[in-house]
Image (tube, rainbow, N blue to C red; front, top):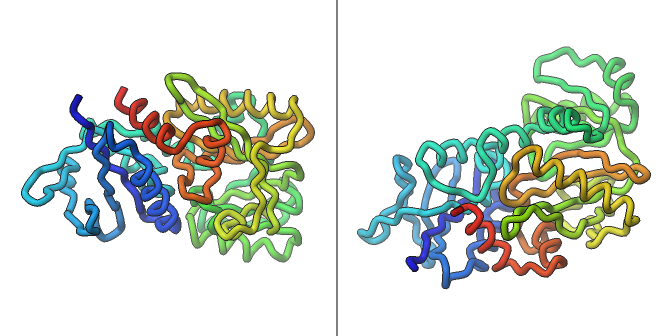
Length: 325
């Protein structure tokens, strides 16, 4: 059997570029080289390049997504998507692969775009009977009516960019006078923002994937943040405790597992997803879904897979095999 050429795409154009490069390296280092020939492909603002094992760069031909390595043309059988944020997680580059007829490890471009837009994703989730926080939407340039916002969502509340990942631009607002600054901060990341009621409960992060032709829910992670919420510092600078499996009751676990699986299937997901929920009593409230979860050493998704007895090599091999099918 000919080994398949796998392009691991990493980088991107968002604040998460360095995290994505670490995720991509993790995939590259743990891929089964008996089955695949992995190649690192950096997709950055100023260049698209294949980076060989000597860290030498070769430009990617955007006409067919190929590269010429020392006079030899390399064509890829499949793309492993490790780009967090745009253009990997918002569907942009997935649409390009669809045009070229190249297989990849993500869902379709439309569904990637849908889930990346928190507002649209929550609207669709609600239509499937999934519980969510009360939210208020604001576009850049619209009049900010403080009273109307607070009447709807209450205090404290969260102000979030609609499309950013990794908790950039998020604030928790406790007092009315903090609202404008929080809105300004969110608008530095995005032109659309989301203001949500504060859900006071246990936060759990739930990984779901298609593994060996079956949709499975991984052991859940409970997030206990030292900071006000699970922000960038909490996520990547160790300012939080991540407890896997989560310390929740059997009924809370069953309810969350059911909703997480239902969302994955209803939204026609493929590959890896990690969704965030807040448990109020026994009921899970859905916050958001990440379709390219972090795959670094610190990341939650690989930790959950390990708890389920799935090694990184098995995790990545399975993703590529599911994509090739």
